[in-house]
Image (tube, rainbow over all chains, first blue to last red):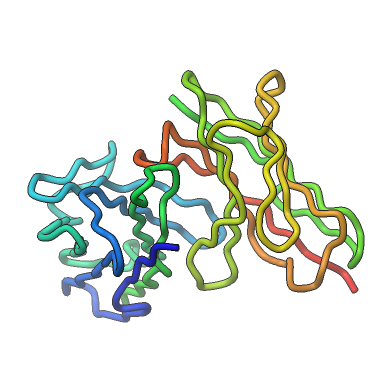
Length: 115
Length: 113
């Protein structure tokens, strides 16, 4: 099946700094990717839809100026958490639809810890 | 709007016993339904999916689920639990594979030796 990678898998940063998370579709092209956030022992919540060549679509309550999304190519979407604070600590997971459009493939996730 | 309800945040079974994880969904369009498994600090692994066609879907590791439209359910079963099945299980619904998924809150499965 198709593979989606994320980098880094874990990141620890100081409060006030920015962190970039990459999501790559390794063996297929993805014009759309989705970013989810998962708090400890909770479910995944959609943050935004990343669209190649256009602006991302954010879910209600997600600050677009804080969570910057760039979908620069057909295989790469990045999520930048700007001026991170401890409450941004979470597990961030991306996904991309497969070529058949009947399934999404999820990345392994990025654990962000803000001190 | 779509939604998913997973009954039971925690299910505990004995090794070798039947596993039954419940999922009910709400959707205004024919749903695409998925079950994912998540091990600690890892991403999601697809167990099985229903898109169209046969309502009894077989997945990996001996899991299966049945789509029951009249009951708006998509319960996950496995005849005999194994210790390695202990994990978090998520049921999800979508319009297709190309739209964001709505996840249930998850069910943590514990397997007792």
